[in-house]
Length: 250
Picture 1 (tube, one colour):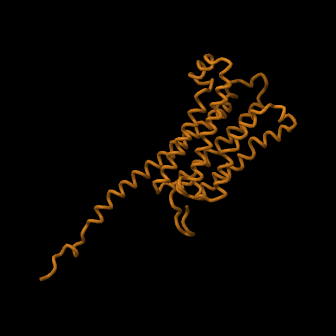
Picture 2 (picture 1 turned 30 degrees about the vertical axis):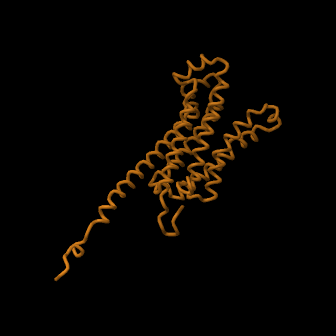
Picture 3 (picture 1 turned 120 degrees about the vertical axis):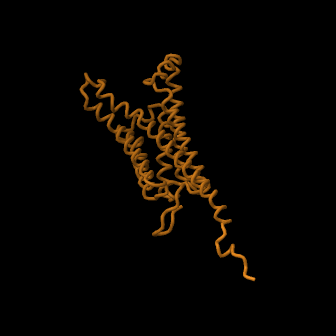
């Protein structure tokens, strides 16, 4: 919800339902980050799991990736729609809600579709597969984060954080194939060329974790401020002005 022209938009965390939306959405983002990192073979605890599961590791890893994508999608939709029409980061503007929902659900749908035998996708050119998998969610996500900035329902300068996180993750995803294409074949796995790989793998995980923590922090700060304002209200209501306390003249 936003105010009328010339008025400051209503903060998304100014109500109890709005704060609940930020806590729920932030928790889903954090859970998505945890699921996304738990079975990465590059991590110290990922390698033992890899050797323990053997060939089944890749099946379990795929299920975990789908779960992480589903949690992230659920979090984005909560932030877009809010709870009981409150807490929307785009002020429940239709374009913003649709763009963020498409951004959230499209990658999950692609993950499920690509589980279908590859023969179905064989006739599609490489650029078609790329556009299907990445172009649509990129455009939808860019529209969504820009509308978050314009809605100004996220308190303070924090409304710029989703845009920054989106551009960081998108840049990391693009840098990886570009660097691998330009790297000499003999040096493709040199440490300097593995840096974009690390950013591409963990960029989205770090962004989800950061956005989740900030959202919960904003909700907690707003709740404490609301409690402080509520505690001060009774004192003000019972305060008596000097004229009211004066005894009536006899």
